[in-house]
Image 1 (tube, rainbow, N blue to C red):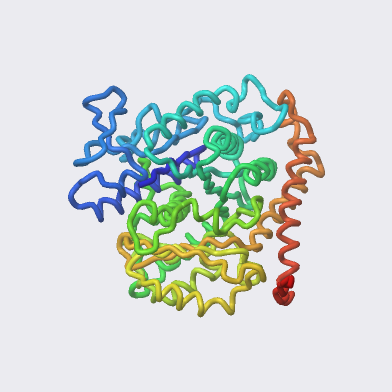
Image 2: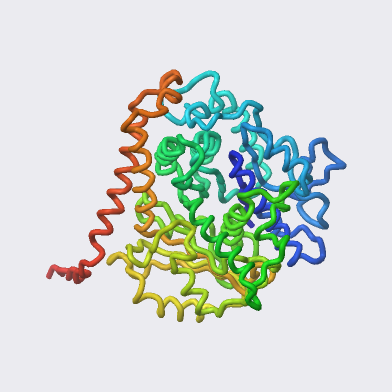
Amino acid sequence: MTQSVVVQVGQCGNQVGCRFWDLALREHSHVNKKGIYDEALSSFFRNVDSRRSVGGSCDITGGRIQSLKARAVLVDMEEGVVNEILQGPLRELFDSTQLITDVSGSGNNWLATVPACLAGAVGHWTYGSAYREQIVDQLRRAAEHCDCLQCFFLIHSMGGGTGSGLGTCVLKLLEEEFPEVCRIVTSVYPSAEDDVVTSPYNSVLAMRELTEHADCVLPVENQSLVDIVNKIKHMSHSGKPGSVIKKDSAIISGQGGVSGAEKPFDAMNNIVANLLLNITSSARFEGSLNMDLNEIAMNLVPFPRLHYLVPSLTPLYTLADVNIPTRRLDQMFTDAFSKDHQLIRADPKHSLYLACALMVRGNVQVSDLRRNIERLKPMLPFVSWNQEGWKTGLCSVPPVGHSHSLLALANNTCVKSTFMELRDRFTKLYRKKAHMHHYLHVDGMEQGCFTEAISSLSSLIEEYSQLDATKDRPMPDAARLNIAT
């Protein structure tokens, strides 16, 4: 059995990450009634006998569960969220050796956090350089606890300073220290109304690092999450039978992983956590057609830079305390390709598919998968050279409270619209050189770093555009072989 490590960076990364751990524990407790530490648990949790070892580092490989520890590293330059976690219901899941914090914070400045991510912009007072050894030590320690380390999951936001700057620094360190281990990044993109005025700068600077150093990126837009949460709330107030959401339901409650009253982003964090819950299901549970995490990049990324996979979830509310009638299986497949279920604001049906993965959970047969793929094929434009570019996985354990669920990961040119909007917002600031002095005061940071970052993003957009231009071209006949006689 393989293991994976989750790296949570910044406020958003830690809140989403801890929500994932809470939901994962719910799933395992629902399946594992005997309290045995099995291979399913070992994929993301350690079993520790804290009585026999200081710091809880004595792992137990079998038998009953003693004390579970998440295979995670928590990084945040502000202590608020981490302190909430340590005082909340998940406090026993982490120990001090997994935490990296600083009191002063990064001030929403990408470079103030991590000049190490740009050549020639290493400042001795910055967090990227100051905490480099500590971060590497924590990552190595987490890796050493794994028998067969398969994947690092990095969770961060793109708009603020810590998530975008230090998050991409950690990504680069992962590539340097563990080049053979898959790196899957969940990146939360800011909306146009983001309260961090420099978020376009932070996002574009981070985009260059994601494009260069990640194996796969799962982009999630804040505005899409807001739209989904509003739909859920509308259903809860509609008064229709079968469409009631309990007041303290897990989809809208912030009680998982942190303490205190519900916060504005809790419902949005839950949706992203459910994305992670589904993508890791095959690694955590058995199934008739399990998908290895390494296979995601291997099958869905035909070109190394074009590794942005558009996620869609159905049902969007995958918890038992949301009382919404279960969708029919065939309707669930249709929903997965609807723009209403995408976690970015895009419509993939009007763009070009390079490849697509369907990760199904529950009592679903391979024949159901094949039937629905054949039914949907005529409506989904694939590139001419990869008409059969489907990857499928079947996990036998459904989400708690549901008979089945589906996560679709589409390598689709529709992601280009998100990047173009980000480039436009960057250009509005950059044309006036607004707020640039906050970045340029860093020793070694030059205006050229901005031009290189926006050039990288424009090049990425152009690569998607070139593929889009082939959409309506007929597929050429295969060349005949000439046999010498």
